[in-house]
Image (cartoon, rainbow, N blue to C red; front, side):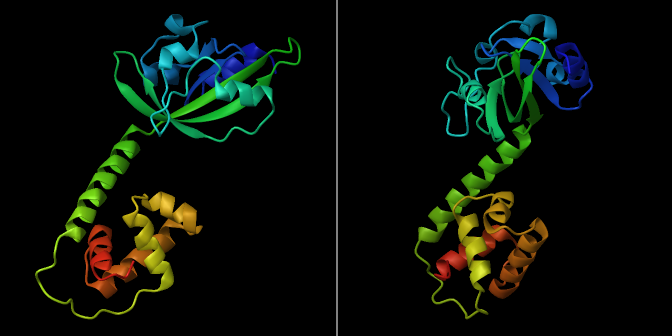
Length: 217
């Protein structure tokens, strides 16, 4: 497939897609990328991707910079997993995207391009941050002295239910808990439902607080 055919294909995708060469210079920028990041294609061609997007990872460390690890991994033929990235959109606002990488080799020119497929996950990140703040508040509440005396007995939690609540108490999202335990989201909901029934609680946050106060997790 020639580069022009690749660019035409990417222009029709629903995901924001852009490609960079071995030097990190932008070679293509589809319509969905224009909508997501706010930059028209005419403003980004042949500009360094790192300087444009100024991406940071989940730990706050710079990812888009000179000596890009993604470009180095592609050059070394290492597998590149998808990753979350906070980038600068036009106007200066920061948004979160999940990036998948496809490596394209033009057999005619021998040039290697890295295609970035980006999906907006800003709302998901906001929800994760809110959940983390709520759980941190819950942990502080758990540490407060319990003036109500000894709690009434409840049905014992299974080991899996305890594991689920312990992971939630650590700030993991439900999706992350399901991945860690290798269970489906539906199975996870069933575990939380049964834990709520046993603890006489109404939601997973209450379940975490009550289970922690009872010393069950």
